[in-house]
Length: 355
Ligand SMILES: [Fe+2]
Ligand SMILES: [Fe+2]
Image (cartoon, rainbow, N blue to C red; front, side, top):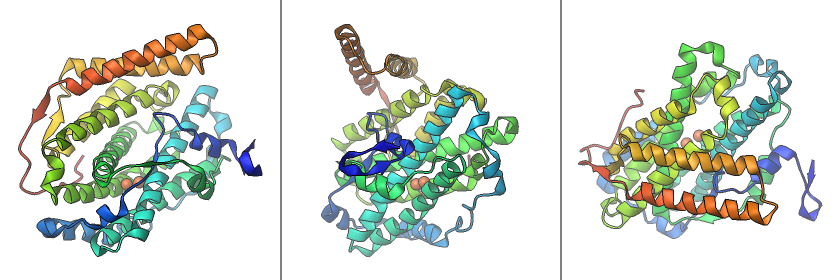
């Protein structure tokens, strides 16, 4: 246990879920009035379809743990893997729970019946997802107090359009990650280090549906996809891809145990997300451009060096870190200015999760 201010106690795992770094999943809040003003009438048929799918609640009975969950022990894992697997579960839980808190809060504040219902349905799913990961953590003896997490986490304010760009991408990249892992383990079951991965196929369809809802919301207001907003879309694309790339490259033991090469895995996930995002964004990052992957590799190396050196204690170490931060910012800027691939938006938004 770690003592917290005010005498409260938090388990070490809750504490690590609370750590704020550039790469950790964040908690968000937004302008409720602006969100309430959303009008989906221009995309009514597609909206009705997406809401209908969410109402059908295909995964109602899916998230039930099996006795297999009690047969895995962290003690059986080598130390490097143990830490990274815990980190994988905790950051996945935080991401799911952060969606849950945001959607539940929006549901509470919305009077617009369309968005109110959407956020209620998505909060339902994310709460199940977070709860299911927490069941896995409890099976390993390290469950997280999610109520405590919600009360103590710091919240970042995002205008509704930024919530749309960021959440759309995080839902679709979540789908791409879960389905890529599921298909890989389907072919190579010897690498399944925990039963939770068996749940990923139906699970990822929830994330796909959530992404569809945000795609329809964005298409309901064409201004969100034009003019200066394109610069924001480009920013979010690079930020989401780079964050995932850097974070995954900090978990070498986890990926090795799963039989995954992080370069290859992340390339597949980013390429798939990029392909899917053509449903709503008028351009994609050119993932065939070698400078794009070179930039991501450079950022990943900086992340690894920072992690290995830990908190700088000497002046020399602080200067080295500042130097790396400058290189990281310049690398991000270079990625941001790489040419993009423009394309026309499809007549209908909706996609099927066929991957
Ligand atoms: Fe989720
Ligand atoms: Fe989701």
